[in-house]
Amino acid sequence: MTSTLPAVSEATARHEQLMETYSAHNYHPLPVVVVRAEGAWATDVDGRSYLDCLAGYSALNFGHRHPALVAAAHRQLDRLTLTSRAFGNDRIGPFCADLARLLGKDMVLPMNTGAEAVESGLKVARKWGYEVRGVPEGRARIVVMAGGFHGRTTTIVGFSTDPQARGGFGPFTPGFDVVPYGPDDPEAQALAAAMTPDTVAVLLEPVQGEAGVIVPPPGYLAAVRRICDRAGALLIADEVQSGLGRTGNLLATRAAGVEADVYLLGKALGGGIVPLSAVVADEPVLGVLRPGQHGSTFGGNPLACAVGSAVVELLSDSGPDGVLARARELGAVLSGRLAELVGHGVVAVRSAGPWAGIDVDPRRGSGHEVCAALARRGVLAKDTHGATLRMSPPLVATPAEIEFAVDALAEVLAARG
Ligand SMILES: Cc1ncc(COP(=O)(O)O)c(C=O)c1O
Image (cartoon, rainbow, N blue to C red; front, side):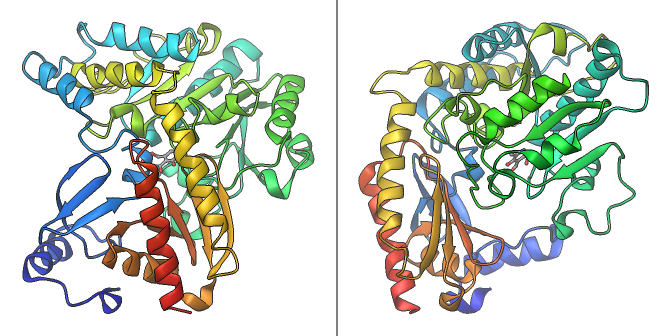
């Protein structure tokens, strides 16, 4: 990995050594040790600046240390940080109301990580299946999509089609059926065939992020919706990565003209400051949870809820100066500029707003090597699956910064041609 970068500094090497010795080896990071960041830019331990085009896998949609979010967190830190759900606090109610209104749904279940939101959504769907749909106890099935990514818990990796994610972690939770996703099943025929009388839900990402920003063909999500309606199954949209502005829309599902029964949110909901995730649905669905049946010590803590309410406020600005409008502007620049690279070291580009999966010609290097070279030019991005790169710059970046990132990629690819 480090062979493609110049020798790392003594300070970087010291941090890498600590990580190597004391931190579990479940990541393979680039040799960049960030010490502070502001907006779209991060600074490393040696004082070098990088345009952050990963943005915490979209957890930093509003950039690093967004002033309104940091102010909300500071105000709350000085007052109250944690109560547990054994008592009320004066932040959880307003936050749930803010988020429910933003999405036009009845209720919110606040959790912490994205994987917890997914787990919670699956539990709610099963319980709804038994109590509302009348599926015989223990028989509920949920259909999921090949290539999808929903987190790292045992249940979730159990239905993953990525051998690296699931290998060595079984035995797994039963009750899941995997079908091909959008581009491989444009009319959702495989999904229709997989539905059974016991199917209570279909779980999907409206754009598959970790798979390399795979955008389903037009009409696919609507076909999934129709199939769910016919079968009386819930459509659960995992918008942990695609939601809250990443595609230039509040929700990628709605942007495709489709309404899900359950939305799963995370990442950017915590403003890049605190872990905060949520299951959002109407009362007949989320109302199946009763006291003692589900919970989390930190879920709905006042610090996270204060930040979450400030995030909702940012997203509520649907005007020309709002974050969604900026995201659409950046998306047009990013996809337009990346299209120019096809045939010049890039094989294909898929994008949804300022979110792109870039298939690099493998002869120019692996995704990791290209990312290492990009870092040397001051741009942070992340590879996924071999020679595919992801770019998801903060929505507060400027068009000129997007140009800078694409120029850097063009230079890297040209140098490796
Ligand atoms: C679509 C989707 N769902 C769920 C998750 C899991 O989120 P977390 O890492 O916060 O558990 C991710 C993380 O990348 C994701 O992209």
